Image 1 (cartoon, rainbow, N blue to C red):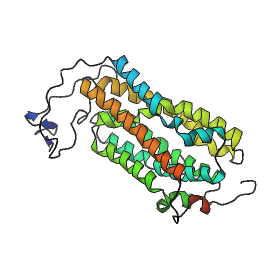
Image 2: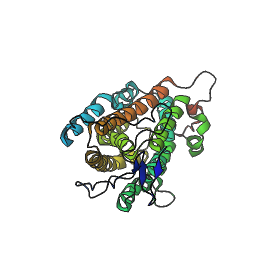
Image 3: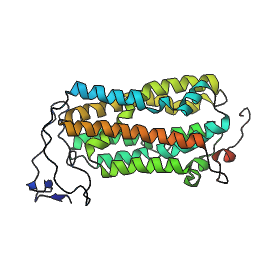
Image 4: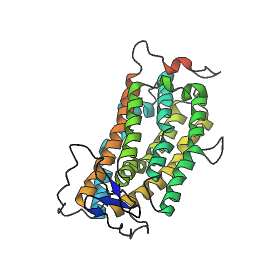
Length: 297
């Protein structure tokens, strides 16, 4: 179990851990806990042998991370492919909007868990921007609000989106798994998992074009979330990539970063698997709660 030294810094099994080295790329120190090993269990409490393998260069690490996104990002999922081809029914699209909202509403939660791992005030201030992006500076602003407006544009009342009892079990498990990953894993792993943002801008551009072409019954104002994420996703992805490049200095750390990104891709893929299958027989269907507006299917 992790302990702390008298000054409050993390201590390893042999005493206080050395102070984190300065990050030459960003000026931020490696946050306390960024290189902690897995939470203590009976199976992993023995110290690991030193990793003496040659680390990849920062550019080699970046290439491997981008290769994970290229192969496993959810833009390739059959449900997204059908969405962008205009092949979803209105009820399928509403089911996705409602269940994806369960993920959206937990984004600031996972970011708060990541922020709490940082011991650098400047790093915390920078990461807190992500929470403000989704929660807004005040009521009626932010990404969550814009997703609620997307739901309304599709005929889904806000109360339906906030009703977590309608969330598909597979979606709930995927989101819980990601939030718990950010809660339990070290900062390096949690930040690396966020690198799906690197692929978000292209996906958002594709999605905007698809909605405008194939789903004109959704008011254009409802697409504000996608438009905002083109810039925000690119900015957030580059920021996280800079941190991972600076922090992941050993081969073990680098492989953990790659595995964390692969895990996040699996979360997003699993979420869409659940949406694609839909509710089990007899389960409440989100689409049944949709308000049919004039001009909507």
